[in-house]
Image 1 (cartoon, one colour):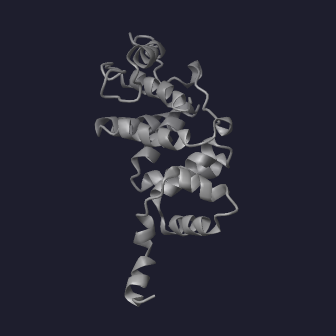
Image 2 (cartoon, rainbow, N blue to C red):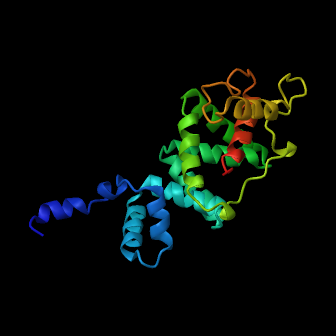
Image 3 (tube, helix red, strand yellow):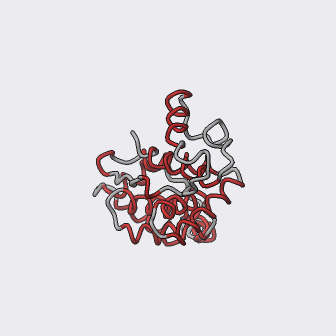
Length: 206
């Protein structure tokens, strides 16, 4: 009210791009009829290109009853802007699919995140978003033998990732940190990807 320059600066896109919004506040503002101002604020953040809000929207569309096509489109767009958790989600979804070329692209993205040491933080960010939702709304991705990345019958570790995951989770009590056990010691990158797919599906557990 007293400074036009400050008011105008506060309405710049970069301000809305950097706004820190807790996950629960975003969910509550989105569904509560009492929070029109909150919804208006979220809409302005989306318009400005707030990557974290767009990422959460994409997760909601993909796994919480929204439009899956829209969710995947948004996730790809957010990933293209360097959002590592979005890149992680895209890689998992591509590797879970049946298309061979998509699996290869997903594996390439996975390898890049693994090499950068980014997998743990990506999983934590994704888990925080999905765990902030109602359990009955979650559409858990399906993982079966046909989804597996490693198809080499000569690979000695092929087919053992489920046992390694359960030992890591139930034997050691921590299953997200890729730097602490898990499949990090497995030389086959395809098997490591299969381990991460198993872990990804279990991130939906309550």
